[in-house]
Amino acid sequence: MTLDENLAVLQAEVSQLKADRNSGALQNDVYEAIDDLCHLSRAAVSGDTRVNYAARAKGDLALFERLRDIVSAKGGEHRERYLSLLNCGEKLLRQIADIQSPPNGHLGLHRVIRNQFHFLLDEYGFIVTDEEPISMRLIRGDVVVELAWATQPFMSFSIRRGDLGEFWVSDLLYLYQDPRCQSVPESIHLNTEADVEDWFRFISDVLRSYGDEVLSDKPGAFDRLAEAQSQRDAEYIAKMNATHGAG
Image (cartoon, rainbow, N blue to C red; front, side):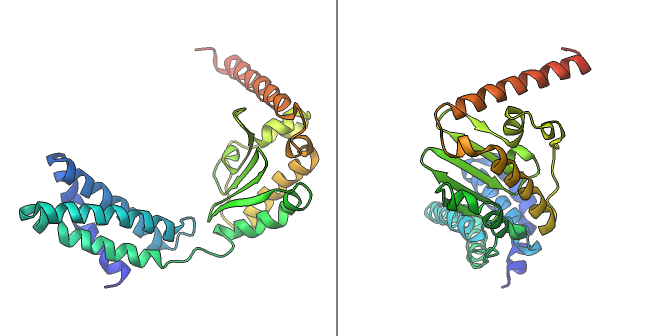
């Protein structure tokens, strides 16, 4: 059976599985596993490139194998009701495991990051420690830079060191009194490769302009950034209170 056909088999059962989920822990576990798999499979069928299908399938296969063993051991009506569905789910997961992520990530994200942020590797000695279709993590000593496809700016870029918290592009702009701090959007729309290129070119420009101290992990750099973040947050709260009332 094709991926679409196996998905259709499971989707036809989801409503009844949901209705039965309160009958017991096993029924609930089977429902949640199959419902989650249906969502994953629909993403695969639609060609959604944001998902690391091989990694997801590997983890989910272990769950389905465990549930199949439990159902087989119980026998009787549990085996009759659920075993074929779990077997179908395992076949579907093996098909999903063969789906390869785009070599350059979702909407060319990895290519964009390597082009726009090569200075992190070449000039500061960062190394890439993790890649997913929608994200990349770079580390130098205790400093961690996270870059990701996202719908909000603070989720697309962050920098951190130890337990000092996470800092965002707005914090760097505020620290160095760059007026662009006031115009960072609350949401971003990265729908095309050109959108991804434009947004991360902006982030790269901010890091090149103002990131040297934190990227070099100079003494006190993150403390100063933390103070700027705290002051920026306080100003934002005061502005909201003045506009909408303190509630």
